[in-house]
Length: 324
Ligand code: ADP
Ligand code: MG
Image (cartoon, rainbow, N blue to C red; front, side, top):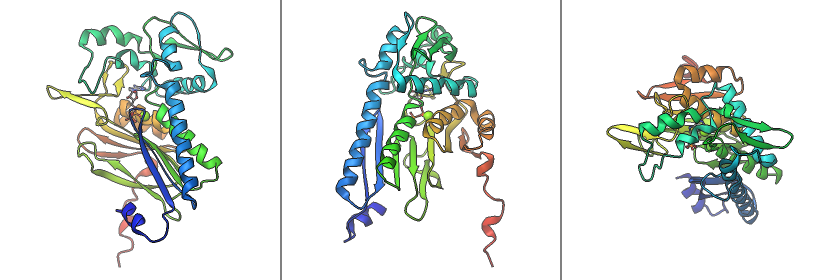
């Protein structure tokens, strides 16, 4: 509705935006600039950056460096380069922080899923492979910037953190070019730059069970927000929903929560933390967030109940104070 009004306006629209299918989802850029041609150029730069990162970090591309790590790192240390090495390092740090709820080695089981084809690993495969889900099997050499796996069969996948990295890098590009108001989104991960020119951006959190509906909206400025849900990639079989977030301790899709949203200053963190809170569930998840002063969370459980971290608790009766 808003976009329609802008397009119909006689004044040239100064919000520019575009979306593109990438990384198995959609990447979109939305920014304010007084020169539409320049805005267009910045948007292309962000897409180019997303595609560069995908070429480096996608396990779905045989030619990516991460695929090469997955093929060879059990035999010998593989050089990862600054950027990939640092993101793997951050992912492993978050594994420590979340006591293993976030674990990029989930992929030894994860690789058997194909959500398009409704394919999943059978119980024997899960039992055999889940012993390989353990971030401590990934050894990093800071000097050589290399990655080594301590066992054959270990695989890493940055699907739970790379989109946050993409939006963080995208916003960096815009900020360096002097843009002051923007949103970059990749799937469930967004990073906001500034505000909507005088008022906050309003971010909708999807209703996990009503397609196209919003469970709630939150006003935000200058922050990152990520949502992990069991509705993004899944299929159902005999009433069981098989989705893309794996509980490392069982090797099965995590259950108990329908969606977990995390808000905070850094999209790499909100991305990884939303996946983590999803895996940990309401109690442990919100306890984790309570220990991170800059981060807040909203969790929707399997009964549709909504839980907030302490910093987001709605004020008890403040909403009625204006009533005469
Ligand atoms: P989305 O991809 O919808 O933004 P998430 O940020 O929650 O959702 O990331 C889910 C992705 O994270 C999965 O598709 C998979 O690639 C990866 N993943 C699944 N389980 C785990 C886990 N326990 N730890 C780390 N990454 C995971
Ligand atoms: Mg995530």
